[in-house]
Amino acid sequence: MTTRYQWLLLATVLALGGCSSLGVQPWERNILARDDMLMDADALDLAFDEHIYFSKEASSGGQGFAGGGCGCN
Image (cartoon, rainbow, N blue to C red):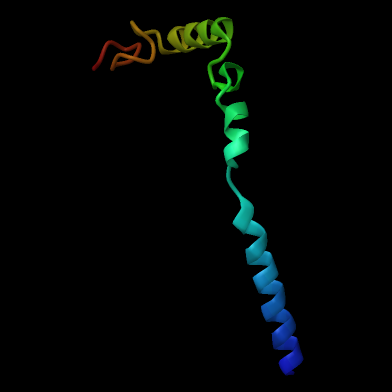
């Protein structure tokens, strides 16, 4: 019975130890800092997304202003 607990403890320690290397390593940060890795890297895609959002909201300014298409604030 104790060997079962030992195996369970070993499996738990190994499973938790597998999560210890999550994150960005210092030598990988230059890759993530590139301009093409931004969420809004493509200006044309950003303009299309803002136009779609503005059209659906039917309000002046789209994302930056309060209120909706009904005229209420």
